[in-house]
Image 1 (tube, helix red, strand yellow):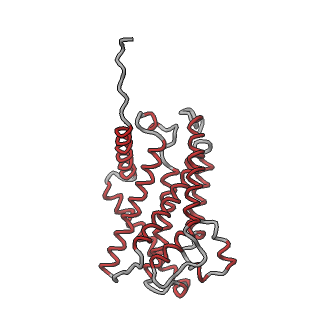
Image 2: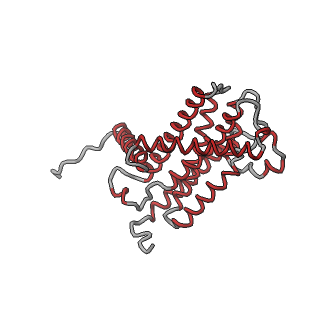
Length: 274
């Protein structure tokens, strides 16, 4: 009767507290791969630059350069590599975030939603920083670049990130049930996108049989639409922007439902026999 009742914080204060926790969790994700955050970002830029160099050499060796879009060839390769790396890196970060039964969830403000959001934001920061640094270096040291629709290109970059986060959320929700199998499935999906993303060819120039093998992949549509925004002389005819957006929403709903179901049964005792 005479016990003091704790005053519940307002919704606005709770929202700011959640944003603060997300910020610190994102910083933790950025610093988690290396003791020095700057070194971790530089290594990520080097990794993206090496992959870009490998694909440029592959196009030259295989004689695929003639199939590129009319314009800057390096920018054409970048359009595929950056979208691909953003998609798969975000998927890997989200699927590998702290699970509901991990030790991090023992801290009161922490929860799986914050873990997923911080992992996705950290992946976006890394890939955006790497893409920006490589584009700036190429523009200043080699050849000035010109992007037809920069806003639309950035929008497709965000769609590639969102699709990776949404699909990664499905793997994240299923991982506590069987970590080994889900980890292998996520790796297979990431490796398959080396080909299935369609970054090595132009959709308008591909045969109908070849296009039918890639239409299921939202990243394939995203890369082709990004090239339409990036190059003045290219207009996508066989891909759509609506499909990856709808795929993101569907995968997000499936992932959230799976995550809420998993949280009802998740226990710290899971996996103790492994």
